[in-house]
Image (tube, rainbow over all chains, first blue to last red; front, side, top):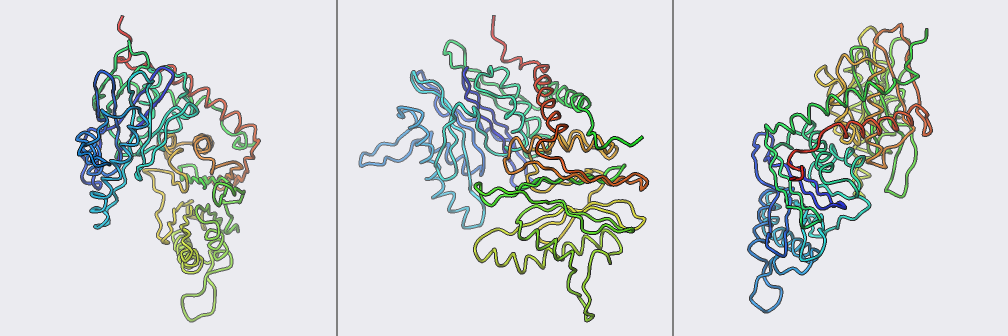
Length: 250
Length: 250
């Protein structure tokens, strides 16, 4: 299992991915799911992956090595050549389709699912950061202002707190914190989601540095956050009055 | 969609069910999903249903009218004849299997899903209350002390708060309140779950009355709970410090 979140906020882009993978419940492992696709002077492009690990790796490798040319010219196409993030998302969608025809078909022949989805985030040239969700079929949607986050993988346990607490104007540090609270809920309810969590923060303001952090299994800040959140939720529950119809008649 | 919760606690049994049904996103309606199957001096048996509405209704009707005899004797079998809640769960499982062979097969022939699941709760004679989850195949599990609740339908959004705040020793009034908080999260994130919510409370102590309440769309207590919970979560989020790695260098 996997849980990844991308935020596209007034202040910039955030991408988060856990690292747990499993093939059945008796085969857990740890793989990086937040990938740097391009990091050069004029473009920084990252992807989080969810779904079949062999499919994900095939897609990422295809993107790094380049997709076959669509025309007569014998030249591979890479993200370094994409003029915009929309073009980059198209290329990622195409990579998913190519992997589906090869790896996916092989998996289908032995009745194993091959679905994969990606969060694609980054910026090219002077354009502001953008965030896309690329589906198994290679189609994709772009994150817009109404709901400034996208999720892939085990999305439901951690969604309520994001729905409540994340808006376009949420500052980056606050959004990272709420993202961790979302992970805390997902990890409590699904063993297939687990630390380390990789975090990427790309402030819209280019003068602010890109932040890339791995929150390890014994991370003290995350441990404290998890402990305090449990205590605060307990306290909050106590402060809500019990239902009036449950009052014992005197 | 649907969301139902059953709690089996030291103090007794609680069953909750929303009332929203939908056939596609353009056809929402309201149907009771918490059904009284038997309510006599020696037994009180209730069921919550989730899944195909025609399947659910077929199962409930079968149980009320009686299942065909399994032997030569021409006598239907009903829940009134079940000696224990385990036998009742077997009968419900059998009703699900019968409905699958008729309604389910018809639905399958037009590629429509027919899965259905039920929470079965109640008590028979002097035995304490019991709670079962009956699956689409007619098999079932019983609620035990380790995790004193079972859910069907849109279970994930509302599960984290139950995982955190419900234990065997949780009092009934507190559990009903936490159940409402769970519904509040599920309703925020899935339009297919909605009030009215039907609530049944069966205290283990037979001297305490059975409570059956419908929490309507404009219920003031629920509205206040929803408002206060949002405010308390906001406050709790503020009280957690931001991640240290997000601090701006001076």
